[in-house]
Amino acid sequence: MFTPRTFEIALLMTVMSTICWGSFANTYKLTKNYRFELYYWDYAFGIVLISIILALTMGSFPSTADSFINNAKAADSGNLICALVGGFIFNIANLLLIAGIEMAGLAVAFPISIGIALVVGVVLSYAIQPKGNATLLAVGVALAVVAVVMDGMAHSNLPKPVKESDLAHPGVPIEKSSVSRKSIVVCVVSGVLMGSFAPFVTRALTTGHALSPYSIAVFFTVGALVCCFFVLVYFMKKPLIGEPVNFSRYLAAPPLYHISGLIGGGIWGLGTVFNFVAASLTGVAISYAIGQASPMIAAVWGVFVWHEFRGASSKAKIYLSLMFFCYLLALIVIAKAYR
Image (cartoon, rainbow, N blue to C red):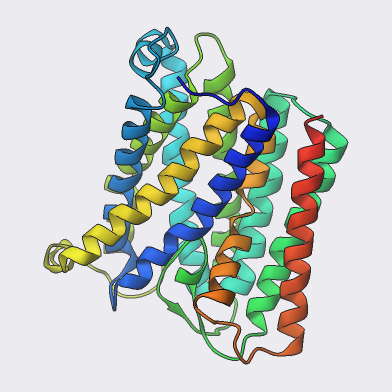
C-alpha cells in the first residue's frame, strides 16, 4: 500500500486534492441545459469507481496486512460505519450547498457554508486527533476563511450572473436575488454538515483496528452514493428551488453527459483519496484544511480559462487578488503547523 513517507510528499498530495476538488466542475460545462441533479448521479458513480480502482492498485500493492482487502476485513465494524456515515453526511452537505448557491447566490452561500465547514471540520478533527501546532493551524484556518469571504466578495462584484458550475460545486445559472432567511439556514446547515464528516474519517483512521485511507475512501464514497437514493431522489421530487425533475431526462441524456459526470466524479474522487492518504501522515485537520482551498483553484479556472472576470470592476479584481494571497499564506501557515 502506498502512503507518503515524508511531509513534503503528503503536502503535495493535499495540494493535488485541492486541485481536483476545484477542477472537477469543469466537466459540467460539457453539458447544456442539463439539471445538476441528473449530472450528480453519474458523478456519484464516478467517485465510487475511482476509489475502488485506487484501492485495488495503490492500496493493494505490495500486499500486506494493510492492503485494501485485508484491511477492510480486519477493521472494526464501527470504523466501517463511520466511513459510510461520513460519506452520507458529506453528500447531504454538498446538495444543500448547491441549493444554497441557487437560492442566495455564490457570494453569500460560499462564505457561509465553506467558512463554517472549515472551522467545524478542523476543530472537531483536531479534538479527536491533536496533530500539529494548534495555534498555527488556527491562524491558517482563519486566513482560509478570509480567503473564502474574499472569493464571495469578488463574485458579488462581477457585472453579470455567475454560474455555480464555475466553482467546486456546480449547479444551474445563478442570478442576483434577495437573500431569504430560508437560504441562510440552508447555507448554515450545509456548512455544519460539511465540517461534520471529517471527524468520522478521523475516527475511522485512528481508532482500534483502523481503516487504511484507501478503505476509508471506498466506504466514504459508497456512503455518498447510498445517500443519493434517499436525499437526491427527494430533492429531484421536491427541490428547494426550481421545478421537479424525473429520471426520464437522465435516461434521455446524450452519452457525453453521462461520460462527463463519470469523469467529474473520477476527478473529485481522486482528490478525496489523495487527501485521505495524506491525512495518514499529516493528520485529518491539516489535510482537510488545505483541501478546502478548492475555491481558489476554481477561481483560477474562472479567470484564465473561462474568462469570467473579463470586464470585472477594479474592486472585484482587488478582492480576487486578496483571495489568492490569503489562500497561499494559509497554505504556508498550515504547512508550518505540522512541524
